[in-house]
Amino acid sequence: MIIEPKDRKVDASEHKWGGYGTTITKTIVETSSLPHCRVFGVIELEPGSGIGYHVHNNEAEVYYILEGRAKVNDNNEKECILKPGDTLQTNDGMGHSIEAVGEETLKFVAVVITNG
Image 1 (spheres, rainbow, N blue to C red):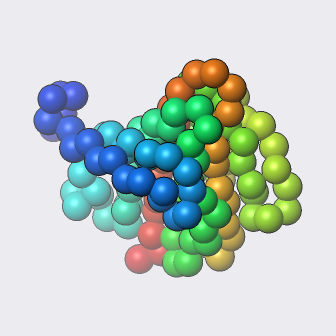
Image 2 (cartoon, rainbow, N blue to C red):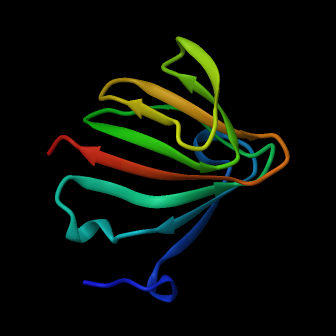
């Protein structure tokens, strides 16, 4: 199956998980066709925008940074800055947040895999 950009779903949500600004999610693949996958998309955050801290229960999430810089909270254990090519993995029962820092839009792939 080939999916062209014009056929992809784009969602905008405000203050996602208590964060700041607008979160744009561009679906890569509709997850109804992927067992155990709840999200598979590219997320865009303008500088100063972010997704608030949240915990994943019965699922895991991976962020792969494409563009920009991200300040992440990794399971309330540490904050760090991620750059293109970096990955954040949040396993079942763990939490995280992400914020666009710097001057450019943050773009990253987000994949949420459910336990079943």
